[in-house]
Amino acid sequence: MEKEQLTFIDDAVREWLATLDDIIPQLIQDMVTGTKQNRFDLVTNVDKSIQDKFELFLNKHFPEHQLLAEEKSNDEVHAKKGHVWVMDPIDGTTNLVKQQEDYCIILGYFVDGEPVLSYIYDYPHSKLYKAVKGFGAYVNGEPLKQPENIELKDAIISFNSLVMNDETMHDLHDASFSYRFIGSCGLDSIRVINGQFGAHINTNPKPWDIAAQFLFARELGLKMTSLNNQPVDFSKGGNFIISNRACHEQILQILNSGQGYEK
Image (tube, rainbow, N blue to C red; front, side):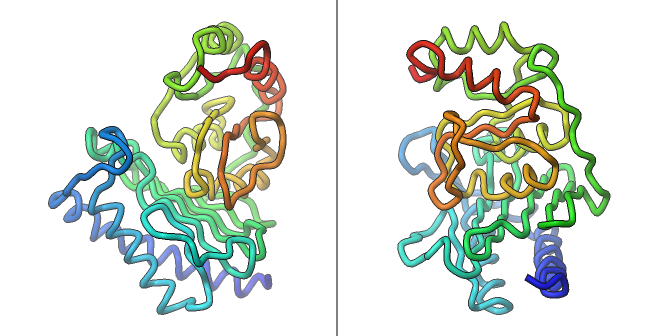
């Protein structure tokens, strides 16, 4: 894709994201919460409204672009053909509902299956993280540096303890410096992108949970693989780790030792 075209799309999307600053406060004030698969799987009018607004934006400005997103049927989306946006309108919905904190908007733009633009908008803290294929990664327009490689023994790592067996959790705790879990795949990943965490592990993310991370990892020299060290299919999701290179191999060894990490 030509740089001019990429810049045009980036400018338009960032302008759209800026409009959310005027919309989200009222959506939160009028928030209505429902559930999907169980009482912990929350969805709100905030999620649905943001996604609907982005779909209208695409239809108006880029009608040839497809949208693969959490709160819609994606049966007609051909994710690896042409121009495709993958969106999580609110990543960390439980945090939004219970805390009004620690949630973000995730957007990944793919052309014929290749990531070319990525955004993670940490709305509560007014931080827009962006990656552009071949041109690096940024936060609020300032370039991000490649994170320092941190050995696992010196690194904070992030994972959901509810989906791992006790032995694996203890091994990870013993091998690492410490453990944290924010509960938003995008924001846990941002801690790795910023160099604050050594790694974030997620055992069952959907495509929209990890849509932006592919390009950030590529532009910042991080490792992003499945938990058996294979490429991750952006259109399907599945278990993944985003990590600095010094942590990656040792964490995968721990996760896959014995009977594996699953309960």
